[in-house]
Length: 254
Image (cartoon, rainbow, N blue to C red; front, side):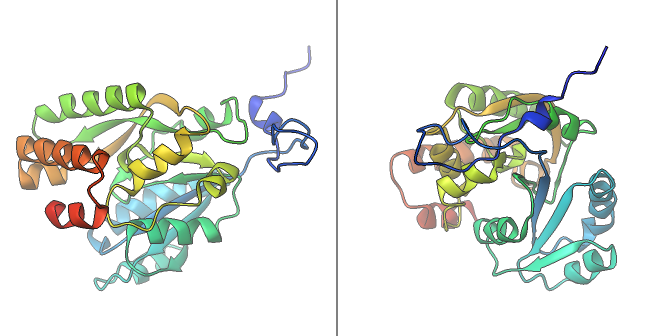
């Protein structure tokens, strides 16, 4: 019996046409190419471990792009020494992610924080999604760290994301290039760029919420205090929804 064609190979090339209101309805079939985009700034201490993690994905044919925002601790030289493609950009996570997307070759873009690690079967999970032109989503998250409270923080993050349709950068947001372009890329703001991008993407489709967990560092909770960080993030998020400019919130965050 012939093996059925995987969903990945039925992913549709997403270009609007004048004959249909559904951009993917009459497009040609092709195989998805994934690009992982990692914005970086002064990550020399973690460069060796990051290189080892990303090398596993390049061996699977994934297009990996690192975007350095002007590091002054030798990050760029270390990563170039690992053989990865490095893009230089002005500092700023949104600016860097947009620069990486411009250099990427993939049909699907995954934006990964430098202190976040993908689950081993992430590529397989993405391959078996029911892709369409405006598809986007994120993974569940596990926060690594000593405070026991971090397990609850991660649980609430995952629950809130499913409820609201809003993802955070810690959850390794992914999207089709067509969805990225339709949203206009990440907004050029110093904070909440992931929230704003999610709002734009959600206008076209609900997010795919994968239960596989990425592992992200809990260092900001450990450094600032767990409860203090929880309170700060909820306060900033509430203020953002009320219309406080991201530039003003960034000052409070720092």
